Each structure stands twice: as C-alpha cells, then as structure tokens.
Length: 218
Image 1 (cartoon, rainbow, N blue to C red):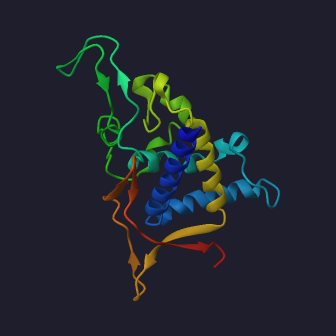
Image 2 (cartoon, rainbow, N blue to C red):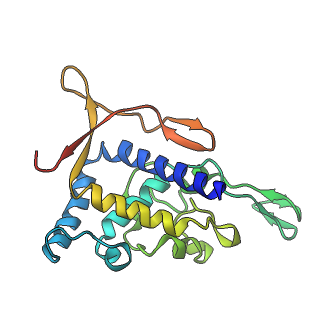
Image 3 (cartoon, one colour):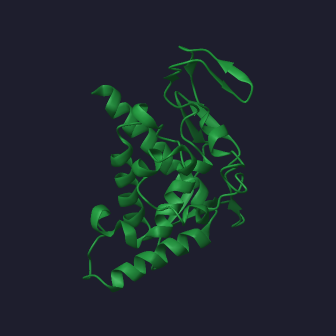
C-alpha cells in the first residue's frame, strides 16, 4: 500500500509542478483552456463543475495540454523494466533472451520519428488523438502517443486515477485562476529555465521557482 501512495502522490505533485512552470510561460495556452471552460459553463447550471467521466470529451484542448506536459517534461527518468522473452535483433543490436530492458522516458518522448518538433511545447500535436491515456498506452505500438505510464502488462495501474486527478485539477484551477511567473523588483517576469531540472529520488522536478496565482476577475 505504501508503494501505491508514494508512487501516486510524488509523481502527481511533480506533474502539477511542471504544469505551473510551463504554463506560467504560456498565457495563450491558458486562454484556450479557459475558453473551453467558458463554453462548458454556458451550457450548464451556475456553479456546476465538469465531471471527468461525463464531460471529458468537451475539453479536447485541455486534454492535449495535459498529455503534452507529460511528454515535454516526463516526471520519471526510466520506465518499469521489462525482460526479453526471446532472442531478438533490433537495429543491428542483439538482445538475448532474459535481458532486462529499461526505457528512457526522455528519449522516447523526444523521438522525431514520432513527434514533430519534439523540443517544442505543442499541445496541438495530440488533437487527433484525445482518447483516454490508458487506451492510448495499450494501443498498437505504431499508434501509441505517450509512454509515461509504461505499456503492456507492466503498465502503471494508477494511469486512470492520475488522468482523472489531473483533469479535475485543471478544470477547477483554470476556471478561477491564472498562473504567471514571479516578477523582480522592476516588475519584470522571472522565467524558470525549463531545460533544467532537479533529480530528487526517482522524479525530475523543475528547478526551484515561484509563481503568481491571480483570480481571473482581477
């Protein structure tokens, strides 16, 4: 039980940390999330809150942002290990049966054969595939668009809960607030360098930084 709690809380918190670090520099992305929320609110009773299972399909761009954040800056360095079930040759490399295979999350999510301009934060890349992450991770190899939770029999069992928790946070936070970078004594924004991270334990976090959280009506 402690493994489930540790794995779920640390990775989720770090993903939200990256969300703030990235989106504080992307006001246009925040505006598009808010536009989806405003559209949803216009069709629902005052004070209603989007429900993941019922309303997810009405927030395609927010889903794309969520997936792109996890691709752009993976929380983990490596995925769960797998073992080769038979001898195999891949790109002229011989992998013997029984070899332990450990995947690099960064390398897999920056593969230019899979992602156009992988070094660019571009949520729109997922607009043609906004299905749930569990379905995407278990699709045919050529159709998989993210690998942060692993795949196959060793896929992280928390993938469904994590997706729901991130969705619930996004729609609640961005319906009321915007996130902006810290400012210096002259009023200039202090942007965190997204190319650097701190490796603490098994997760990669943004370097220490501060943000401003402002209600939309101010």
